[in-house]
Image (tube, rainbow, N blue to C red; front, side):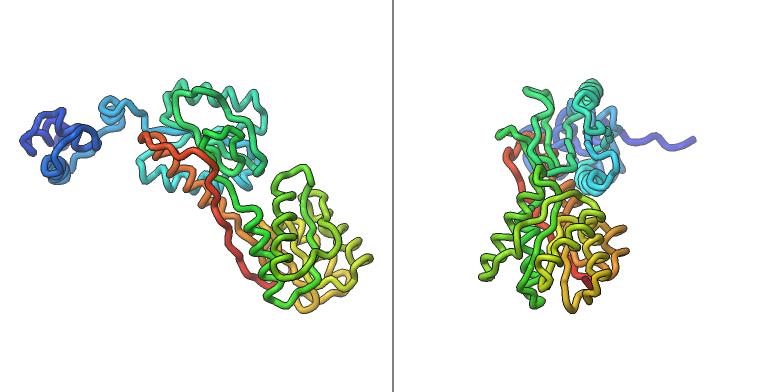
Length: 330
């Protein structure tokens, strides 16, 4: 017969305290002397005590589960954010339920209700754009942290990327490698990230005493747009020697068009993208130098902030995670 697993009563008896005191000591609650906490922890370790999830829930009033609601059906943004969040939540011994809202507000509210019915301890809402979004609800019974897409609510907790900082990293690299006539091709003007990256590029160039070649080229997040924009750019500015693209998919189309026009990369024209999306950046010819926005770090930070909020120490406001440059051959 297998040996009986030690329970909280066994720990209390070994430490010479009541069951209630042992519970408080192991869960960090109550005003106990550190000597008592240490004695209880030592007894638990000696007995290899591991409280069951049910027991921990009864003792703490928590379920040790959180919900992650994402709007990104393709997983390009949600997967790295989720991985980072799970890294942080795992340290807090939390289990995550992942829900895909498919960018549908009605479906999002459905998932939120189901998660609250399961009595999750908190919720992370992960977006796929950096545009501010409306909160998922008011006066919710659990804390909510917004990842990538910040909440428009000033008292909410949000974690997002440093869009202007990403542009600065890209432009600084192009200037360091000798580029002086730098153009910018990016996504739709309606997207906050496009506008912020364009503004960041203009500011970074000004800091070097330079100006953007022409106006920012706003278009779509696609290789086709990158190819078309470069073909038009070379007609009006054939002496361009650097192109900062607002996304790796745009940059991949741009490098194709530059090669087809006979430009030598990176000797004649240098190209830098944004995203560090491996399947695109590494397969480009040449492989793309790009700015990694730190999506996994955004998820990890969101998880940490959620745990802090669950423990009663929320940090409202927008928390910015800086990106980093990944140098390849473009």
